[in-house]
Every structure is written in structure tokens, then in C-alpha cells.
Image (cartoon, rainbow, N blue to C red):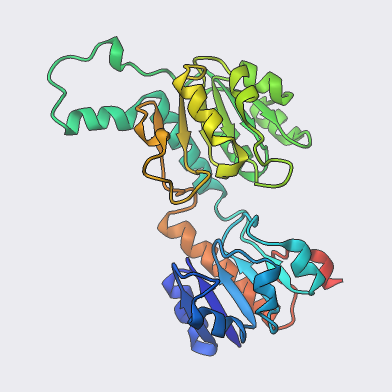
Length: 322
């Protein structure tokens, strides 16, 4: 089988795939013009990787394609309608990254609340020359209220950490009620507006869909407390980034912790990078050695099952199997 690997597939998994298949790995290429990429795409039986945009134009160039295996829980890069219409399977890697992403989100909460990156730089720059005063104080995390927008697997894991680790009050907003979270963590379901108005920390952890694109904008930021901190661990386009910038500039909210941006890699001129009250990360939600390896391995398992004519464990467009 001919397998096209793109962007991020861990080396041990690539090595295993190459033992029995013709695998070509591509990274940082122009997928519309790179001749080696396009030539191999024409022959590919399967695709495995991260963030390759799979649309009708690409599929027109991949006549032999049977399966696309995302090394990610998100799949907004996939045109599921086009894939399904062509009977091409699409898979992702849920569950594996849940705890790792939840850890990262809590890292952002703690970093922004206690101003850890800013004060780390104060020390390293040699500017810690006297006892700190109120100009350098942060805010407590324990016993505060966290609002979780999107109570899926990751939202549930964030609530677990908030409740058991920090004695936080938990509000959540989701498409459906989550009785287990309410029972285990005393989480309270709230409308989006109620959550925004009452939370000290607002954590956005929804997938990017037509419904969630630009879910949080000027109106929503204006509803938040002036002391609130906004955390985005979902996708950059779930918010209106310019509205976040204005909310921070105007003092409508106290700070933000961001793992994602509207444009990635982020523009070095982006105003968010100039703000001391904003912690910025390069989309590292799942990026630990252990989790990335497990994700690549599961993606390979999905891929090989599909290529063998078996139903992959994590098939997204289930109708192609019926």
C-alpha cells in the first residue's frame, strides 16, 4: 500500500509503517504545487498526519484514496461531506490526549493567574532588585469559579482537576447536560451568558464547527467580569481574535491564556504577543512525548484497519461503512 504521511507522525510509527508499505513523508510543503507531493498523492491509498486540508480539490487528485487518518482529535481540516460522498473513510484519535490537554489548560490558568511567565522574565532579566509589591501580585485560583464551555472528554478532565485539586466552583455550558459531571464535581449547568457573567476563569474547549466558529466575540467578552481570565484551548477561530485584543486593551477582562490563534504560526506582529497579561503557547495541547507517540500509533491503527478492509476503531463518517 502507498501511504502519504504529512506533518506530524512520530518516527517509531513511521518506521513501523515503512516495514510493510511504501510510505512518503512530507512536511512544510505547498500541497497545491509541490510536484513530489502531488505525484505521490495521485497514487496514495491512505493518508496519515496532521492538519492536511482534505477538500474536493485535493480529493480530485487522489483517485485511489481509501482512508484519511488524522493524528488529532479535531477534524475541522476534513471535508466530511466530500469524503463520505466518495466512500473514503475518515478517522481521528480521541481520548488519548484528554488528560494531556487538560493539564495544559490548567497550566494556562495558573500561569495567567499567578503571572508566572512575566515574573520568570523579571528574575532572568536581572530586574528583581527589591521586594515585590502589589504591582506584581497575581490572583488566587483555588476556590474561584471556573466556567467550562464544552463539557466533552477534555472539559470533564478540566472539571476533575478544578474540583479535586483546587476546590473550585464549576459552571459549564454544553449542547447537552452532563449528569456525571454534576454528580462527581458539583458542576452546574448554565447558559452561555450566565457562565460568562459569573466565572473568574472562562475556559473554551469546544471543537471548531460551523456552530462554534466565532462563538466568543465582543458581546461575550463584554459580559465577562473585568477581573476574569479567558483561556482558549480549542481552536483559534472559535473566537473573534480582534475582539479579544480590544477587550484586553480596554480592560474589559484581566488577562488571557492562549494555546491557539486565528493564524498559526502566529504573526509576530500580533498585538497579543506584546501584552504582559497574555500567556501565549504554540498550540502544544497534546505535545508531550508520550501522548504524541500514542496518537500516532492510534492513527496508524486506524489507517491500517481501513486499508485492510476492516472498520477502523475511530471512524468519524460511520455511514461509509453501512
